Structure formats: C-alpha cells, structure tokens
Amino acid sequence: MSDPTTVDVNGVSVTPTSDGDTPLLTVLRDELGLLGSRFGCGQGLCGACMVDVDGTAMPSCQTPLWQVAGQQVTTVEGLGTDGRPHPVQQAILERQAAQCGFCLSGIVVAAAALLAEEPDADADRVAEALDRNLCRCGAQRRIIDAVLAAGGAR
Image (cartoon, rainbow, N blue to C red; front, side, top):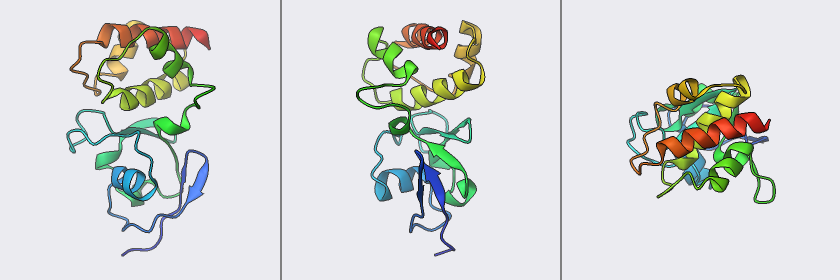
C-alpha cells in the first residue's frame, strides 16, 4: 500500500485506505459507498463512471486514486439533493430525458461540468461535450434539450 491520499469528495475531505493505484471508481463505490457513478466499459469509453475533477469531467474507472490527490472530486451525489436537485438533474426529470438511467449519472456530471464552464453552450457544444457518454436507450435528443434548458435556467 502506498502513502495515504487525501481527496475532497463532494465537499468532504477523505483519506481512502485503498492503494494509490486503485481506480477512483472503485474507491468511490466500494470504500466510500457512493454508488451513483457506474461501472460500464471499464476502459473510460462509455462515460457511465464520469466524475468532475476540479471542473473537468473524467472517467473514474481509468483514473487512479493518486491522480486526484488534493483535488476536488464531485460525483452525481454531490451535485444536488432530493429537495434541491442540480439544474441538469431537474431539467432531465422535467423532460423525462432518461430511459434505463444506467449511464445518466455520468451524463449529468459531464453536462454540469460543461455548463459550469459554458452556461450558454449551444446544442452542438452540448452534443460534443456528451460525445463520450454513450446512451443506447435513444434519449439523446431529449438529454441535449434538457441540458440546454438547464443552461438557460442559470
């Protein structure tokens, strides 16, 4: 086991006991009990495990714990609450822009990171930002519309 790595997860400083080479996704799910980020392809290609690391959406399955030492990690659990969802979460709910929901947490995190940087992103930019997130349920147009609405709601 390497030296302890301290990381800020959803506003809380934590020092996981996992080895520094452990994928962040494993630490989040297995050690911290944050189950929102999903294991999809395991190769950083599908986006189901996307988390925000200091303002950048990253696949947590391919990010070793040591790489996020001292940084702020935000998972879908850290974006909003039941009573006060993030604007992207609210817009997706209002527009029924999800079907199976497996990939949705990664989409929400990637969209929130985009809108934090570019609140006026247009449809082409939203589609580009979500290109790494694969949704096979066919809700892509509604997801883009929801993200656009969330951007406009800010």
